[in-house]
Image (cartoon, rainbow, N blue to C red; front, top):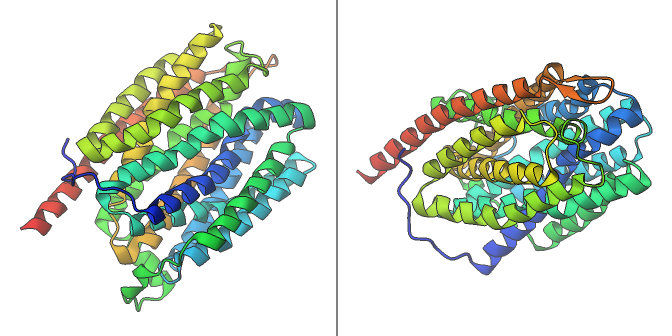
Length: 415
């Protein structure tokens, strides 16, 4: 598959290094806030006496509200300094997470997740708009690779420590930890990040609603939105029930569970930047196809496992995550070339909304596919894997179409 022509690898400036680092730190808190629900599933379901479908609603409640807020903010996303937008929504995200840490029951937790999603959904899209504004296409693979380490850091540092807190002080404690880290990240962004206003030079006389409609009606953008919708389904379908599957189906104890996330994250810390560098050097599309193939193979194995040794669970999870991160890094870098500068904020906001909404639907669907026995064992996990594999194959086709579209556009600009 062809990709956009690659420029020689350029070096980051000191300020670009700071921007990448602080955005990765910010993403660490947002990702940990979402990812912590997966390992907490094995604790929350029996503690709150809720079913898999109810737990799926906790996950999807965040996703649906994040999707709605992204759509509402899309029309305004290119009209203001991106730093101000980032600070506003990140502050709301921290407050929402604080409410999660204070929630006394399932109903309050569900409401708190919805509030958190209203703000958290816009944080990610604004961050990616900033990356697209400040970094040329030839650098974005490496940037996405470094940002991806926030996922890995949440596994190596955040998840094990959060599980330790949950096991010793209750499930509220990890959310309080995220709030404390988030306050530090917010202060750093407020003090050091420079205003980002370059996109304002493109005069846009459309009202916010017209800007939103204009963005979602462009053919090339629609291809990106469709691909994003399917890209997010795998994580939202698998992650919420992975810890319960590991514990109740594979025989992993709650004490051993943090080790899986820790080892997987440690490996990803090294492979993420490497994948990003390879994406810039040999092409985003080839790396995406390799990551997708690896994901399909390991998914087919993992979702059909029974009682196996801990080392085997760790090995399969690690290889699977390498494939998943390869898909994420390369696809985000490739599709960042789709929107025009004056549409980046709106495009990223809509894309984030679609990602969250489709992910929320995927979480609900996964809750309907997976059935919990009285013993806690999950049935039909292999069917869940088959659905994720099918969506992965379809995204490979869609991404190849986007790659060809961008290649044609690049060649036209050169002639």
